[in-house]
Image 1 (cartoon, rainbow, N blue to C red):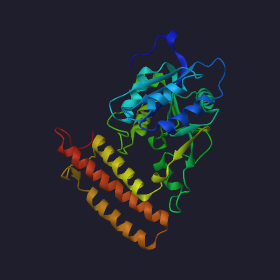
Image 2: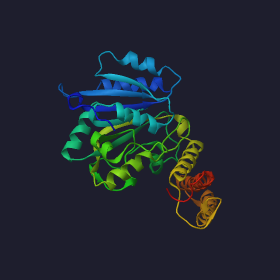
Image 3: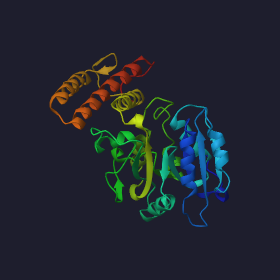
Image 4: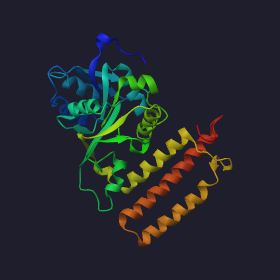
Length: 321
């Protein structure tokens, strides 16, 4: 990655990737305008438009007055990871802070991120993500499903991130510029692409960060609020999210196993059948959230099989990456 000249470096860059959410983006921009930061803080905001067809550009231009440097970038290559990588390449900050176009950071968010990174001598961090539900969630949608909604409320203290399973969500995440120089950018084979609900790019990046011996922390006081629209509070949406995410991860990573049928290791098939049996049992005897959690496990296996099958159809691709 080509770093800016030392004389051009800022303290931090906030990177917001967006796709056809101009109205929601306007709320995010207002929340960023309301940030309470030191007068001498040198910062910027980059909006990366990932091929939107709405009024995104006009929304950014309308917000530019009275803002720290606000830049608009257009990334025609569809995919969240492509958009994030464009933002990283263009950013001039030493610390790159990520959020999304449906997120409202609290007024002290930037300063909390910067102070937490410094206090823990960390290279990367994530933070607390509270839900802003458009409607009250149904009774079956308990906190065990919050991760599928990019909500993180299970802890509010500071703690070290030591495994990829603890990786933050892109709605509230920061990484020093030098880290990308060392471990590389986001994997463009992962992450959401248009309306395909893929994921895994954040966890994969933090796998590389931790493997490089770098330090990552969770900052409980660095807080944002994530809008959760009504359509996302449905079983249909969450099933689709789990299926498409698992399919994407299987397609990009593969799975070890010598004995295969249509690219799928044989041991996956009985696991899938057991998961289907547990779904039937859950419908009969389990609490609503446990019954649906079993459905999500089955959706994971079905997505895994679909991804592995697609991977086997690609020339020279079989097994793990």
